[in-house]
Length: 416
Image (cartoon, rainbow, N blue to C red):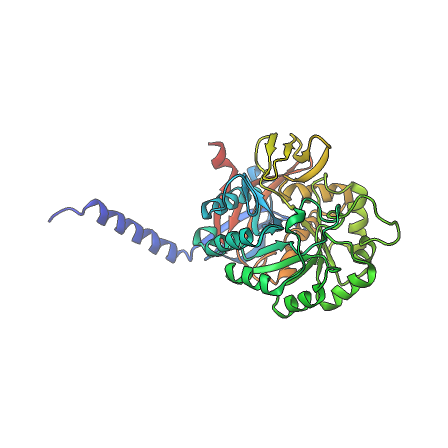
């Protein structure tokens, strides 16, 4: 009898492994300290979902202090690790999206919304087409459920416009948006706009009718306009306190009505550069842990070494060792380079909120806003999106990230 060839042996081995996995039910158990109550737990995963979360008596010594929490959900990612979803030194590619996702996994992010900002219709159409083609790539494991369009329907005024190029700012146009959304496979799930612009209220209503979340941002709307926008369906104030002019009227400005209306959630950039500690404390105390979302608004400079760079406008930017992106000539903030885990730790530090509340603001709350019913918490039946980390010297140090039951990052593998 002729001995089996290498290909046949490989097939038989694969079949045996498959059968063994089936016999065991495909179980795996993750142990750690539960983020909500600091008690040791075992999380059982099967077929990419959480089967059970059970209290256990103790953890092995090497896992003491290892926290297990739902994976972080970042609703505003402009780019990462040299990859920009709008700008950048080169064209956006499917491989670029995969690279950015891989690097985000290392920071504990298991779900994110690639965010495209104000630019020409042609560039937005091109990049949404690329994103639409890659969104269902099995290798991404459902990490990208949809996209965020921040602009171009924002205020043209200096300060409120922020870093968005003036020449591309325009009025809300449902026909244009429909074309962009079609290119994105109808996966644009949030639009940030200025409600005071002509046609904004009708646009907001159409978004609500189509299940698209509207964020108010980069605007100078008065109180009546803010309340009208909420009446029409606006749900969140995008990165509150940023995208706002430095010189504002102390009484009549867009901050107060957005804070005052309890129907509106807020997102905040908690990296320690975009908002002062006092601002974060005030915003948090008004909206509370139920109505606040921690976001990163991170750019392509994240995960790059400190140094000076030239952006597409020809401006010189500097990434400092502390993680600030600034215009060195004016010493003005130019964007974010800190992943969401830094914001979570900083919000805990300046507000005194619990770990549970901070993590929920970066997992449960965005999941609820966008209707991600399959993720955002550690409960049986949910996707097995988990992050295991330690709190060390006020920082979140990620040791392992699991997406849909698959280990996508292990710190110890990086160290080998």
